[in-house]
Length: 433
Image (cartoon, rainbow, N blue to C red; front, side, top):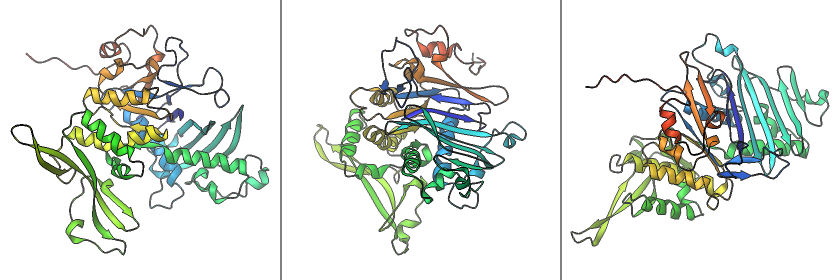
């Protein structure tokens, strides 16, 4: 579970921004939409975590940049050990509208729970060089696992002379290469837990939406649940199947009939032991006569026949696999624009699945950007609502509704937001007759 994410000097965020999933200390909520964590991993009074959070704000306010900041951190951890023409560290995007912003430290830090253990991991980059990296763990108290700076590294349980034998590269995170060394069981376990948390983290944007293979996993309930939700949403789809079209055999031979066909989404490609497939979903509709009697089936392809299914249907089928996986395995899921192209009731239903006492038993968390202000007023706590805004210098700011004074539980949050009570909004001149 995510406890907190902090980022600084990344894209539109020059100053530090904090996205916290710790519940506010307010008896009014009575553990609504939260998980209660036993004391130990988290101190007393801080051991209640939110199940979901939504980030609202105008276009270009920086909403998506919070998600992208954590995605960049994940990619740096998972891939900085790989030699690339342009390393992942060199792709760090410091604040664009300040001269020499690359000379200021960019900071990324997460606090999370893994197997009932609290971890804090972070790193800082300046001029495309890693200048700081650290990992802490808490059982009853916070303990240093490792700390690295430009002079060297300090490792838990090892004398400084031994720690200095570890070779560090200025473009490679130590966490990414730590498994190459033989450390004590305690040290190795902390590193493995941290790596696994980043591997399990689900961050979904339009360009990496393809989760069609999830529907074919042995756990058939993903398919059953997805079909149930689609039929409940009244999309007209009677059934669906994963469709694979071989474009390359395992020996490298191309299928010229299929290889030249254009890809709508690069993530349609799926490599496996048998070769390379292009993935699609075959959506199946009933055909009726004039009396409403089913007379046959109509099969269409979600991507190959682009335009038959609505954009909302495509969006739901793209995201639904990730949503069901997060709920089933208790993963942290970040979605860009949950409500985009989806009916309000459908977006609200998905949100309520995460906030549910019975549906979300594995401690899955949903964090999403959103535009539909009606979602603010549907069973959401104040601390689950975040606002992104941007000043005249292009600097984004992130705040929680729980940070504001004189906000009542009975307030219509959306109405007060539109009136500018919480954040300044763009002013549009009414020049219509």
